Image (cartoon, rainbow, N blue to C red; front, side, top):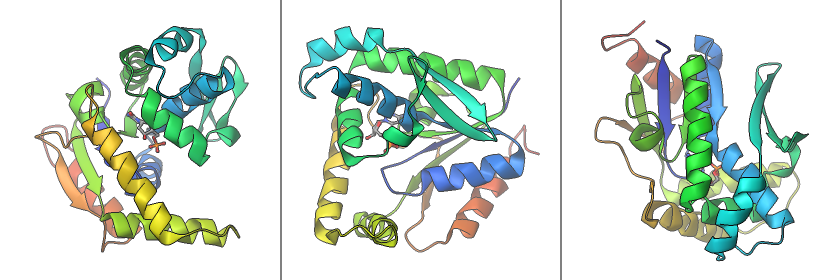
Length: 224
Ligand code: DC
């Protein structure tokens, strides 16, 4: 049976950075589930569907074929055969993903894809509902979080390093709005699974967090 590590938490807590590092160290597949919701959101935006139009979202999502390919160790998301990795990291797509991921038809489709991937290989999977819904039997479950100001500051540093001008307060406000939407939606809300280990990364560096998660994989009945 394949081994799985589930990492959940709010936007900007460092999930993908940590998950990628662990996948590399362990030789596991890194599965970025947010990228799948983002690819679906891109399809909906291109189709002109409004974020509030749940009926249209339910119909249109059926037309989007989302698949994953691994190239040079990295995950490539394909939307109806097109590599959309370079198009899904915008604020607009993130906002739409946060809205449309609340639709049951969207979730059903993507959760099935995620579960199939976890059956086929050892995985580190990150998202919002991995420990609670997608992989309830995961070998290690982590809930990664950090204060909203810290998460906003990290995003601010990332954007300014890229030469973009931005406002820290506005970024923090966006993060808090996204937290609220992800935590308060009816299906599969962002929540810490009862058996997940909480790691607050506010005052930890990447190496410390990676070591803490690796230590968890070394414990337990299937530890190695
Ligand atoms: O992690 P991210 O920012 O790329 O995710 C984008 C949105 O997708 C996020 O706001 C909520 C949604 N999402 C989800 O509902 N379930 C997941 N497992 C992953 C992401």
